[in-house]
Length: 171
Image 1 (cartoon, rainbow, N blue to C red):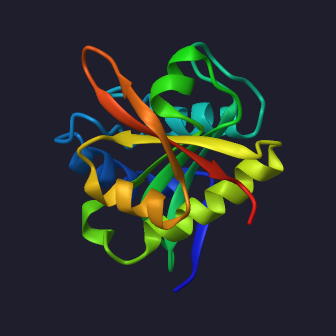
Image 2: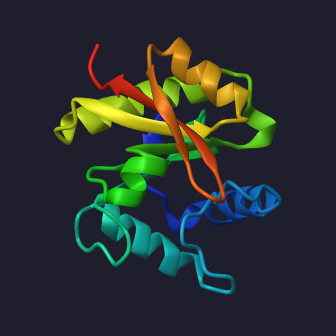
């Protein structure tokens, strides 16, 4: 199985929109970040790739990369890597967010995508990544702790409780 992280393309529309609609039922996960209902998919691709390629970064986005996780030619998930953090992102979201679509879970895609994401962050000059997950997400907790992340503390707001981890971006 060949796994890679790559920029979205217009050719991904069918798979990406199916994944997006699948994840709408989950209140904590936005598969296609900032996708606007009814928006042409090509416009969304142009916007997120513009951020990933450093062409523009619209407010309130932060510099980073939005990449699909592809396994053997199929989009199985996505990562959002942030190269800098504002106060909210530093507290509750961290340097990276990842989603593996339901039909592709428990196949090691998340752990491989995490390792690849850390390498991207290291290239961007980040030595220690802040990574968070919902306090009730046992799969993400196991993934992060299995990857050597150090639990730092709980980040609590009126609407969420997140576990904050620190994770070296290089081996």
